Amino acid sequence: MLALVIGLAVVAILYFGSQRPEAKPTRAEVAAQPSGQPTAPVAVAIPGPSISATPSKEEMARRALENATKERPWVNGLGMRFVPVTGTQVLFSVWDTRLQDFEMFVNSTGYDATGGMYSISKDGWKQQRDATWKEPGFSQGATHPVVGVSWNDAKEFCKWLTKRERSAGDLPEDREYRLPKDEEWSAAVGLKNEVGSNPAEKSGKNKLYPWDIPRKRDKSWPPPAGAGNYGGEEAKNGVGLADFQVIEGYNDGYPRTSPVGSFEPNFSGLYDMGGNVWQWCEDLSMLQGRRVLRGASWGDSNPDNLLASYRADGTPDRRYAFVGFRCVLAVESSR
Image (tube, rainbow, N blue to C red):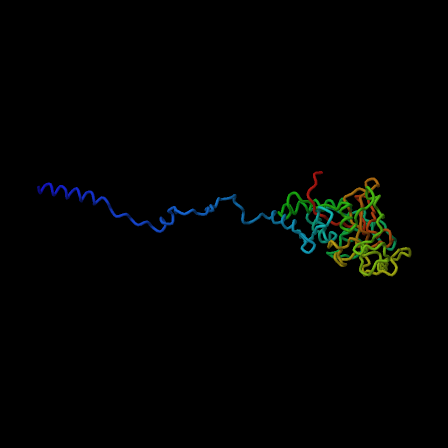
């Protein structure tokens, strides 16, 4: 009997000893338990493609180009400023290429842009043996527009500047510097709906001067004070030619070139779209092998030449003391 009691006690101990009290769940486990009530969908973060926190120098340059405005121009490594122009797909330099810009090109490459330059003296306009872009026959400062450069010289400058800016990562690979096309130049000066199929047919048809375009007045002459650097009475200084023609009653204060930005900009924020120096364009004129020139210069006084629509031209290898150039920044052509 005692043995039976002992045996039952052992079984009870073994049975009830194995039934331990249920452990209380941790707070984390409670939170993880499903609820009997419906729940809102849970947002799950899915890793996306990695995005660089620091854009490349080229990407930053591209963004700056796309965000350029008249009030906030895009500035390149030489300090040249570029703004968008309505009616074009390019950015225009706000001023002509300066002496300091061209000097950087020559010093960097050893390019020879001398020889055969036409300049003015007491003997008139002729090729001056010692005249060059650096010494054109009159005094210039670093911020004056470079003169005495041919169309070929201007093209070489654009090629060099494109390569230089791309190598530094300051210019996207699909952008390039070049000369403006004739139709781009017209848009930049404010001409619309010109009649003609080529520059020669369009030349002189629209009778507006650059200073008239914002007011849409027709052919107001002479230029108002401060209209630009043209061949005013001051241009006679240093010239002993009796037949040297000037704009009577007009004086802009600069006998030859003036520093870029000396006069008021036009509606697009561009300076000297009339006067200071003629500007080379990409286009061929109707005369075989010659290139279009726009804008008039410090030496011009003929009313027809000062029209915003007037086109002059020159051979691409010829250098003149009244001709310079302006760059535009464009998507690289497929040509």
